[in-house]
Image 1 (cartoon, rainbow, N blue to C red):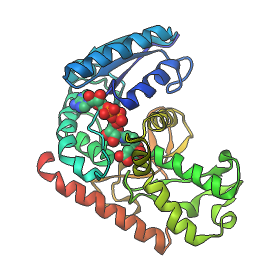
Image 2 (cartoon, helix red, strand yellow):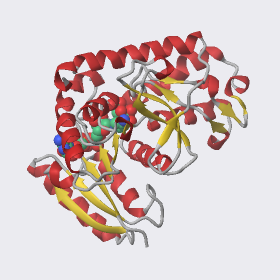
Image 3 (tube, rainbow, N blue to C red):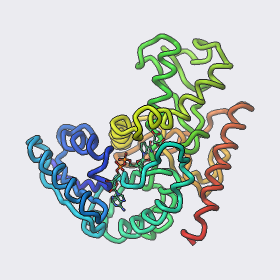
Length: 327
Ligand code: NAD
Ligand code: LMR
């Protein structure tokens, strides 16, 4: 039996938490032979902590063989202590009519504190995955506080967008979902994101040779993927939760699976024309468990360059908006 790993999850009593924790404990995220200790962090609010107690009871009641302990806390120093993975889900979610930029200041303050605490108390091999919106910039903010942990350990989730794009392409082409490969997300987890359809394949052929409707690819396809979060909020009155939790399972599972090729948001370092200090979605290949290399060299045509410039501008603007906080 392997040594248990410690997985800290913020916002553990929230919507996403309720779909996520059971999948981590069942082995879906780290594999069927990897025991876990869940370190559940909630806001210091009575109602949230009470709800967390209920979630912990339900985890107990599942009798998951891989679940070797549950910590419940509102103290980040306790929750992130020795954590090997820090899954930053907790944040104020977007409501109807709100844009992610509205959330920047409120949530930025949370991620400053969490970045500092993780850097101080998490395990030496800690990896951080940010889901709470605006995810890219929150990730950048958390990483800005780290002196011990390197920037590449901080990633933000664009996997939900990748999964959405894969699903839309499969529907349009009338093929099984698994026939669609290499659809990667560039830029922000926001409506400006760019699902780079020109590099995708369908049954091994270029997606653009199967879906020849360029106007659809450039218009409704990009728009549907970019605005899917808002469409779900409009329909449910709540933001996506089960699909977001599923995407985080995929994000981490791919990151611990050498050879996996997938989209994550990472410190751009100037790749693909993004500003160096922002966190932008791009394709990576997992090298060793938890580590990755960015896949560079995908050619971008004029349409793709314009889309990347737009999402880069939004990310640069978000960074400028919080510049004082991270100085
Ligand atoms: P939710 O409101 O149901 O749950 C959030 C939880 O976080 C609440 O229980 C709240 O008490 C807790 N929380 C707030 N501040 C906290 C703090 N400082 N420390 C610990 N916990 C704290 O929201 P949700 O639907 O679970 O969504 C969570 C976040 O994920 C939101 O920001 C949402 O916009 C975002 N989201 C991102 C994606 C993505 O693809 N990146 C997808 C869906 C949702
Ligand atoms: C999503 O994409 O579903 C989430 O980020 C929720 C949102 O605010 O759009």
